[in-house]
Amino acid sequence: TGAALSMAALERCLPGDVELVLFDMAGTTVDDLICGEPLIIAAFRAALRAHDGSEATFDQANAVRGYEKREALRKLLSSIRGLQDAAAVEESEVEKLFALFKVELDKLTAFMDTEVVGTSATFDALRKRGVKICVGSGFPDHVVQGIVKNMGWAVDAAFSSEALGAGRPDPVMVTAAMERCGVTDPRRVVKVGDTVVDVEEGRNAGVFTVSVLTGTQSRDKLAAAGPDCIIPSVADLPLVFQWPQSST
Image (cartoon, rainbow, N blue to C red; front, side, top):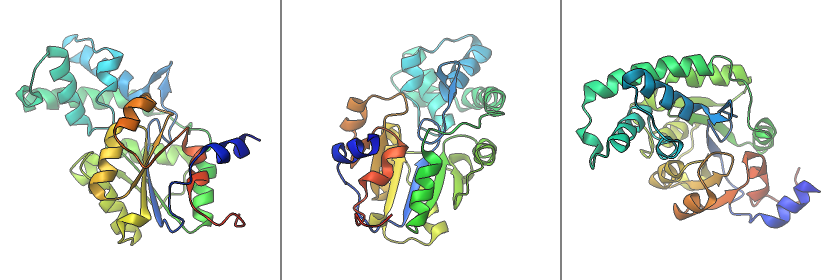
């Protein structure tokens, strides 16, 4: 009955001819809670403490989720120090902090192997329709590849901002996924994520955008970014395609 209720409540906001879906990882497809705190926020805060003893609030760290991690750390330092312009933070300090962040992240992600409930089932449903599946993250590349391996996912490709040389909201990850999967029409592509910057990335690429509520950014904040639809979790994604009702 849960599926029936979800179907009734969710608008079928995506076309039936989608060829590719690019999923974010932490908070979208990866259950990233570490002792009740999202992985990336725990790593940000641990790195700052190791760097200079700084303390970032949850809200400060949450506000920069989704960005390429050097850019996120730059914005976070700027926020903590009350700077008007993040560019005022020196590059050398960002690099030192990023090195510490990677150490903390490696400690925390070594055994990360729990997906958001319904992720593999959604991947299977898409694959049965011939839809290509990619995942991508602002995590360092070795972390992205390690998590995919831990999960045992069979995806068409896994991308990182680090390997591609640019991070969200730059659309490079979407365009890389399209190139890898041989998809040329952006209106046959969907980006799924749990942050505002995921929506901005998808819009910059000209693709459909879906926000999920399994991360830490609120429905109101996500809605203000203007995604094509908002769903409770990735498990609900198959319900919002305009697929023929008779097909299974």
